[in-house]
Amino acid sequence: MSPDIICSNMASGSDPGSFSSFSKCVTKHLNLSYHVDFERRVLKAKVALTVEVLEDHFSSLTLDTRDLKISAVTANGQEATFAMGTKHSFKGTPLEITLPFSLSRGQHVIVEVSYETAPTASALQWLTAEQTAGKTHPYLFSQCQANHCRSMVPCQDTPSVKHTYYAQVSVPKELVAVMSAVRDGQEPDPQDSSRIIYRFRQPVPMPSYLIAIVVGALESREIGPRSRVWSEREYVDKAAFEFSETETMLKTAEELAGPYVWGQYDILVLPPSFPYGGMENPCLTFATPTLLVRTQQVSVIAHEISHSWTGNLVTNKTWEHFWLNEGHTVYLERMIGRSMESEQYRQFKAMGGWKDLQDSVNTFGAKNPLTNLVPNLHEVDPDDAFSSVPYEKGFALLYHLEELMGGPEVFMGFVKSYIQLFAYNSVTTEEWKNYLFTYFKDKVDILNKVDWNAWMHTPGMPPVKPQYDTTLADACIALCKKWVMATEQDLGGFTESDVKTLSSHQLIEFLSLLLQEKAMEATVGTLLAFLNTHLPPPSRWLRLCVRSKWEDAVALALKMATEQGRMKFTRPLFREVYNFEKYREEAVRTFQTHRAAMHPVTSGLTGKDLKVDPSQSTSL
Image (cartoon, rainbow, N blue to C red; front, side):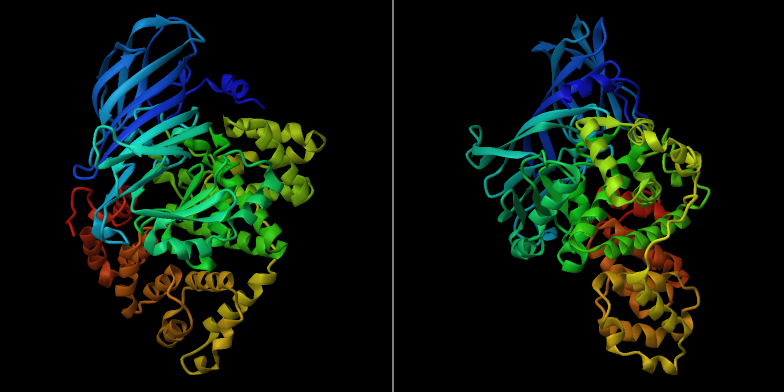
């Protein structure tokens, strides 16, 4: 369906995470100009927003900003008056613009804002040369999800609004810039012979949180007909090897979900402080270097590829509907795994996801409203609500519906149709549900028996636990039981073959099962010594060690928590050491020492985990 037809249907309502009301106007295009200043750690910038008016007598608009220094605003080339509103704790500061003229519904205006970002911009992490793999040049990367784009672009920072963009980025000539867009050439900076300008275009409408920029000593390698891998020289060849299956995954996803519309699909391996496993920025997936182990990366890359359809093409209208992005993406990711591996593999991954959901519910508390599939985020920072709940509770609902509607092929037909209908659109749970009932109009009686309120608006675990095939999990369960029943005397019965026969995914599941056991301390010394000999030290292993009060592991856990910044690893490791009362102060002290080198999102959320005052920190 045409993007223009869809966009005309979306312009209503509001977003609790944004000051911009998209009922009055919507941004259609951004034209960005960045001058990257590593010395001052700021972006000196201009942005021209092409805005479509949705009401008559239109003469003012509000944009989202956070810690931006605004120097000038024009409208169609004429000076416009502007004022900064009251600063909000997490939404930032509204930029209120009054036009020098009035417009009618359907007209367009180009609003240009000249500004500078703050050195502390929450979307940007500035790394010193010492914090990179190469140790020679500084590095910059952005992370805008959920509502951080406003700290690097004044915009309608809501997933309800989608727009195209064009950008030109001036950087020191020894560095390379890449963005979440198609590369459109480069040229010497006419203002400064020591710099180079890189140009980018993104012709597919997308929400602001998917704008992304990276500047560093980057190299690339071709890994497929429409894919390259980017990273510092130290990672690039290994990354090219690890991500060699990218084109196969892309083709598999296309067979399931329809054509890939974004043109290029590149992967960029970031420095270790990147807070997520991956980020689905269009044309340029961001990936953590912790994926450079084949046992880790397959499902993450399949997940980020899937976002090209569910999330990037069809987007949650507000962050309260985040499960529409993530639940469908996990479902599609596991369908890719089903095609490339087996149905048993999909079932096995689903079982692991259920345990991740249990962990999140336990962490938040079973009655916490943030464990609702559709939470109320009024005055709630979306970052604080982030967990596996929208991913795995969302997947569990879709899997439950799959079983009710007739199996994976039948339900995947609905998912593909949903993507095609709502492509280029932002949607709510209600719109998704209405289409579900329309698509399965001959099975409405079955759908009416689903306890929708329990699934959507009730905290805790889902009302139905899917019965997954345990074939691949049985070996993990048996080994876990064998271990738990063992004593110090009969641990000699364990051999290398006990773990060597398990796949990497099964090893992770085995460790997850051990983490759920309570009475582990009696045999912990010999047990963990055995694991130490036969397994690499993943975060689950270190969490198990610390939870079992094996003191030798505390230093290793804190080392892993600070040497990389992937929140999936860093936050649980810090929490485990914090909960080991003897080492609580050491956990806090280590966090405070390393906080300045962490990504702002990682720092903020880990600080909350450890109950550390945000103002208390010491630099490296």
